[in-house]
Image (tube, rainbow, N blue to C red; front, side, top):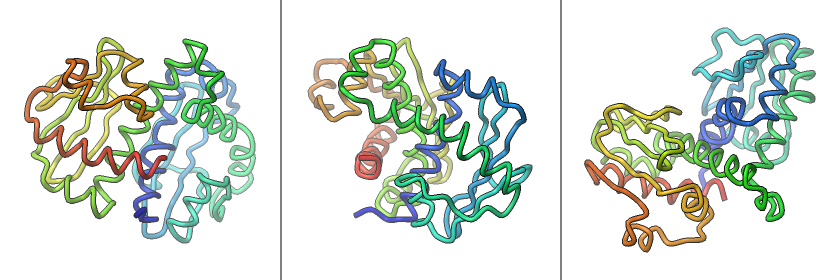
Length: 254
């Protein structure tokens, strides 16, 4: 069963959280932010849920917790209302910088989220282009990684796995291509979009094609592990618990 509060965290930390990497690796997104006339620090504040500020300027996007420094803010009266922003593009209540917010939401922000959606929910035709295929797979990795922490800290089932995960950093990545870090401290998860230098555990896919197949449920994780295409190392209970949370991510982001 999907919990609306946990879905809000998956959307905030997984879907929207990946915007910072979109602006870093995608040429179209880079061009959009490069043409911004003024920086925008947009806060999404969800009652009973997450609150984060997304800062966009010509250098890209950065994300911070809370509303400090925001020059545009949108409040949502419940997690359900925020989830409608992601599912149906229904905005919340502007409470700060309304004119700036409306211009940004209906312009550059929509362009960025449209590009993100195209990469995360690609058509079979689009995936035939190898460059697009690679970007789509990488953006899926970043989105999934963010959602792991979002759900580990909010979903009632994922929190059980999180509470049983030893402290330390787990490297999750694609060999010779990209990696993220899942940091665990007292059962609380944080996603870092960079590899850790001192992983306590590691789960690494052999290549982009395998990662794409795994993310899409097209290949068997067990079979690929038996073939040696998924490398596991370190404290395997950490990886095991993250895999359990990944099952919840698949449900929430389906």
